[in-house]
Length: 380
Image (cartoon, rainbow, N blue to C red; front, side):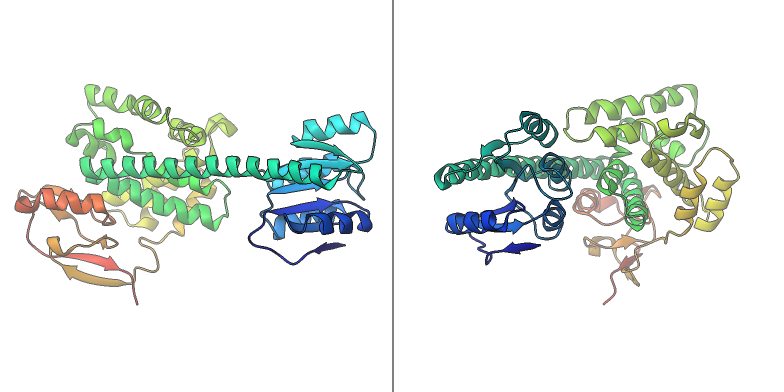
């Protein structure tokens, strides 16, 4: 059984779990002017509320609750809602249970019954401030991370439009597969795809082109290519929360015979990078997948199956138009290569048009081939 007072959106939400309804009623009456109090008479009900009615600033549990002791409940609450501050309010004089609660649930405060309302309010105000600090720091870190990655991607777009185009195509395909499989690490996989070609800006243009088309490299070129993982690692190492991304990029290309030591994301990128290279050589997607499947043990068979279901462009891009180079706008996808008058490809086909691409076009305006190109745009 669970209950809640009328929700007050201007008050911090707090969940109380106790098997004594009269205790919960007294707490609700005492705190209703200070907090939005939600109550549950069992750990199971409390867990359900955490999952369906959060976020809660704090959760306060008795040590003795039905079906699940308080220490176990708070430890699981930490997994379900890690930002929610956890407190214990109990009349049980059991030091071992208290130790378990503190160690397993990382308890913020341990209070004993009966707890005077002023003391309980003070503890919850401290918990609210702790929650504010934790969430503010996390949001700041996430925004900083997003900003850094966006900046790196734009630098890649400005310095190497081809590498950026490949990275964007990889990201779109990684996103389609990861979201289709409901992978919890989808955001890390997408970032790995977006940053997979970051170090390629250090390669001479002819070498980068030969690498992309899987053509034979000379001795010095091979040395440059072999250094790319180390360069990527050095560039990304100072950025927090990219440990998993760096691990994925570190193992792209490792043989599957190494087993579980090769992350799933590395296997996914290996398939999609080589698929993109074959398509650049003129292979259709089905033919490219069939070609890769011939190399038994080189590619993950399950990932090849998922890649075979990919479409060349997002389904929402259902209309094709013909535009002149300087009529390109953000959000379009190139169907044809954008070339210079010399014949050199400046922006490759399948490239999404971003702010960085627009800047590149402006910088090369006098050298652009003036002929119209085909683009995909979102349908109405």
